[in-house]
Image (tube, rainbow, N blue to C red; front, side, top):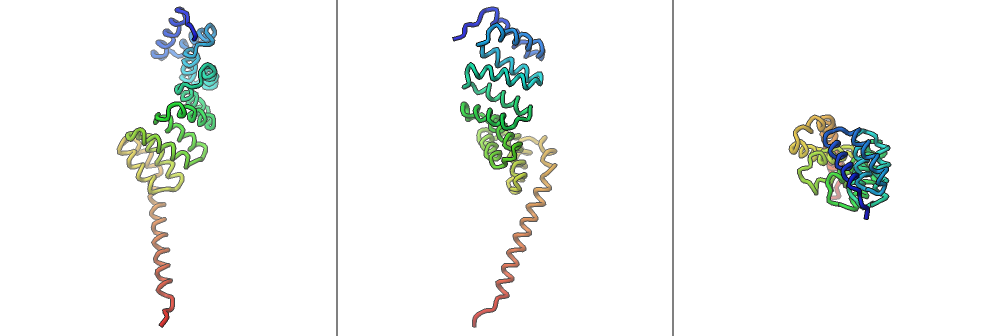
Length: 217
């Protein structure tokens, strides 16, 4: 068990207060001093990672999270935040792996499922994305963003009936999403109408070809 000196406990509290006040660079300075003095202090590395990510120093944030994970790799928040940093770096495979690790620890976190869906979507794995978004909305039935993402994934997969249905539900939950939905929903409606017209045309052609066949007397 790590015993933290009173001085370093005070440093950690000071850093957290600075983070709350938005003074991120000052917090980073204190946290860097703290982990230098207490290299086994997981809270120091975790909060340093968080502060660096807030400062958009994502590569350094990932390194700090890795130091925290080297101390204890069974903490949901560290995997989750490392995933977010990697996603910001456009390392979608790395981010996906982190969210999967996080969900092994806590499979009931809707935001982690949504973010995992975003990774799969970026990696052009539409079915896996849909499955992840489905888990997210099952856990949080009012999760408008995840419903929108699910709708968009169905649209990309040309599953237009589902895309339209989930898009309309997303707008109902959050009307501000209508602008984003409007970028593609008419395409989905037109495609769906075209598919229905084609199916109807084929049905009529089959009926016609059946009626044209000579009958046995």
